[in-house]
Image (cartoon, rainbow, N blue to C red; front, side, top):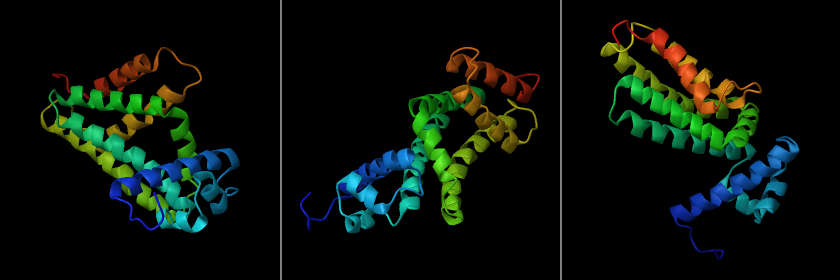
Length: 200
């Protein structure tokens, strides 16, 4: 894009994504603290001043990448939850989608998660808002299940946390007891059977 010609929103988003991924490659290789803004600009093929047109600092780049993942997962979860099937069926489909997403981006998400811990407190809070939005979708679905009798009277927040906490050992285990899909199915059976009413 020649200098001086305004970018469309689509072009700007594409350029932000390109810069962010160039930055991520460097940060994963050299470390967050050791990677300079000058190095990121050079890797992205732009000047330092141009980089600041897209991102204020390195924190914002990491935050942007994590938000992109959260936005995609949340959007897919919303579509599943709005679809047909019982609460338990839809909850299983959301967890299946989550698993497939983690498997496709396994190494990248693990590295990003580690770098997210280096963010400023303010930026960590911004990230948490996006993460909570996804968690709240699951809580709302679980509460639908409590209301319709699929689940007994349980703490919907704790069930949500248990389901999400169970994803990491399925994806990142060094001692698998089956395929990720098989391990997820077994895990969901254990968790959801304990949450069901005797009639469901």
